[in-house]
Length: 156
Image (cartoon, rainbow, N blue to C red; front, side):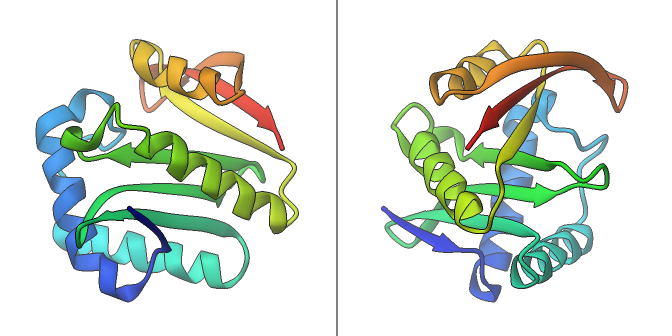
């Protein structure tokens, strides 16, 4: 498996993966409805611009030519850095998520980021445990898009 910075060559495949994961496991995704291809292309292009400006880290795991997952650390509107990660269902529980997140955290620290936060659906115990295994601690619970979410934080 290779870890690569999100690039233009990943966009089409990543759009397909996001839509696939949405259909298979949408209960924990924060999209209110299935996103359109155009919306996803615009979102990913915007994230690539944030990476170029040093406001984000966005990497993908590539396994045998296919994207297995994506991890981002993005400067949000409230001036905190938020972690987002998702994996193709067939690649979960194989260590890829931990490798992606650890790599992204290292890149964020190199940019000068000192603290990151993850927003996890309160019902998604698997995701909470994943972040806790990697050193995140529960900070608070709050409503995000009408969902009860746990906020977990980590000092880098």
